[in-house]
Image 1 (tube, rainbow, N blue to C red):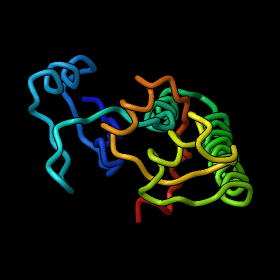
Image 2: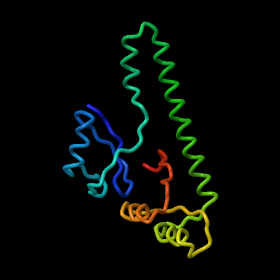
Image 3: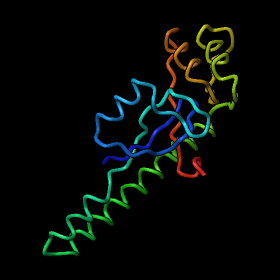
Image 4: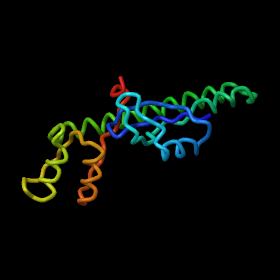
Length: 151
């Protein structure tokens, strides 16, 4: 069994278990996975931290349990550092860009086609809007999702 963190096209986060790594791909292609929040069938894998379970298995086989505990602590520290870095990135964007909410796609187009003075923006866009922006050659990047966003 393998667990994946998943996101729908509206960025609703959820998790699901699969029999094996290729099971997700088969079910996604068949549109048999849907978001429990909105019912969307446009699902993608989200970034996940490595499973600590593998380290726990090592605890049973290692002759030195303090090594396994050290690895657990190291992994937890790396996870915390990654979250803090994501907070810094997001904080920098929020401090140095204008929040345009759900008007992100139209504002990004205005900037790209020089209809308005260039400035930094952030906001929300649907997956269709993101795809259309990409087709128009407009480069965008998602803000990192933070643990508190999923509460």
